[in-house]
Image (cartoon, rainbow, N blue to C red):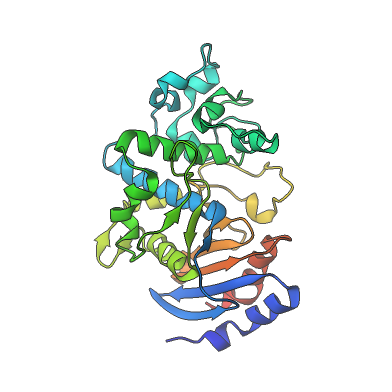
Length: 310
């Protein structure tokens, strides 16, 4: 039953009053869309860092298929790119460290070079050449390069881009046909950004996570991996960034954020691309937006006007 006008009334008023730049919202509960509203057509939009969670899920499926393990060392996938005299810390970095943003970097290698106006061809080499400040697994630092490396590992081990690997495993079962996902100069799916979907299609993926990997009676993702991905894998309470808020300091899973709203987690992309899962309410709230101010204001409106009504 759709109850959009009633359920979303206070939310819509707050969005309008605060000028939050929303494109659309889809609310699912008990597997069904119960409310939705559009401020513009449901076009495919750039998901930015919400793309990261798709990459993490691809890794979970690939590991279940036997392509690699959480404990595998990152350098072993790229022997030809390892520095001549590698830091001992780099030699310890694992796939799990990539997934949890605990690589040991003090800053994101890719953002650093791009901010300098450089356009390197081999992003994996940039990542491996960047010095580490911390022991892997001990320090959270939001790192686009970590997600890119997951995507590069998937391509190395499966001989498919992350996008193509996910086509029969996730996208086609969710009835998401021919999704567009940007690649790096070497043809590797970027992983950390660049996936384009509609709000409603993104909501299907959120529902898949809420279902612990099951869709239409089929187990698409190992349930145990979903359980690990959606719980705290690293402490990010000390995360210091110009954009970080309370909802960025409550723990990080495998490319998934924990929320200030109890017992919930989210996919999170720049400008307000969200799929917010509430397991205790059996609900998913999915939002696409272009909010150039503090995008966490969108989350606050969800907490204040919507979450308690689910």
